[in-house]
Each structure stands twice: as C-alpha cells, then as structure tokens.
Image (cartoon, rainbow, N blue to C red; front, side, top):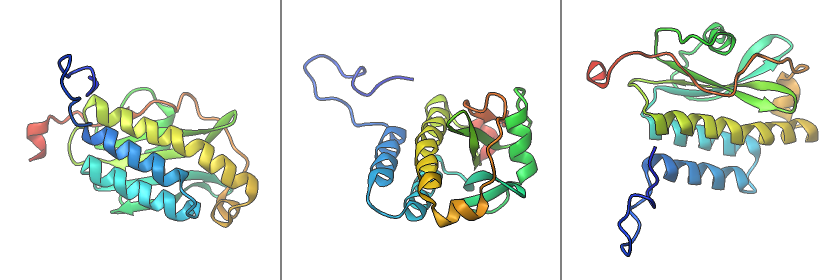
Length: 178
C-alpha cells in the first residue's frame, strides 16, 4: 500500500488522498461526533458499503441468542453461520464475504461483515480492519453506559480465536466481477 504523501515528487503538492483514506477520515469524524451511536454506526456502515461498492455491510454482536445482526446497510444476505465460520477458521471460505472481528477488552464484541461484489484490494481490506478497530472502543463504551441497542442484545463476551484480521473469502479476479 502506498501513501499519497510518499508518492508525490519533492516540492510538489501531495496527491489527493485515496478513496479508502477519505472514507476512513469520514468514518472517524462520524464516530467522534456527538450524534447517538446508533446513528453514527449506521452512517459509518453506509459510507463503508459505498466506498467498497459492497452489497452489504453489517455488524454482528454476540448475544444470549448467539451472533445477532445488530446494524447493517444494503442487502441482508450475510448469515450468522457465515460470520461464525469466517471467525473460527484461518483458511478462507470460497465466496464473497469479508469478516473481521471487533475487539472489545479481552474478548470479541462481534464482527464486521462485508458482502463484496468484487475482490477487494489490500487498501480496502485494511479499511475494513480499521473500521472494525474503531468500532470496538465505541461499542465497549456504549455497553458500559447502557446503550439500549447493546443492552438488549449483548450477552457476556466470549473470545473467538484471532478475529483481528479480515478473512477474505473471495478468490474471484476483478474480471470475474463484471
């Protein structure tokens, strides 16, 4: 991944930020705003979905009933079993779901799942990881102060092995996605 600042010749203005970096800046600003968490998360997911040209972006949280889709935008095609499979296995599954764990304290609050319609590049995969990492502290804080959305859905956390990196499960080439 190259930096837009590093790619500019000495003495010239920096090149414009990448689409992913611009989306990340927008999502950080949204999550840092004074808007209710539920609204900020929804807008952040929509921004991520549009940036990645994805069919769906969703946050899945652990609850007393298992893994529950708590926020999402786009189609509702990702299932809990798909998210659980991505989090539990290091080997990618051969379809178009990208999942990364959302850490919270010593365990995992849940996962950020993205249904992609094309293969994501390295910068886009890093964006998914960055957004999941931003969501962890936000969700932990909301749980501490008793957010109604989290209070009704959350159960005690359990740890899922190594959920911090995205699990890309698509092996399609860009030409396959036209």
